[in-house]
Length: 65
Image 1 (spheres, rainbow, N blue to C red):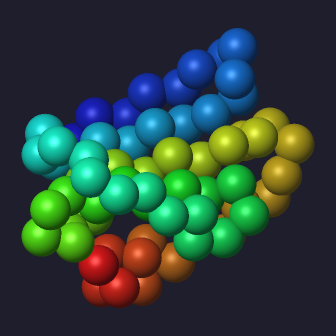
Image 2: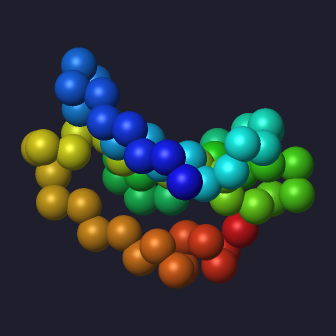
């Protein structure tokens, strides 16, 4: 797993797999989940990190894939 923070865009990007992203879905405000061809979660992006209080149910996000 890789976690990166981009100061310019105020976003965190968590890469869970090196699989190719074929679909993305905004699962809640400012939270985008990327999926591979098997509908498995490969990455999660959180936008506006400093300006919002994000609550993410990670097990639920991973289970929903």
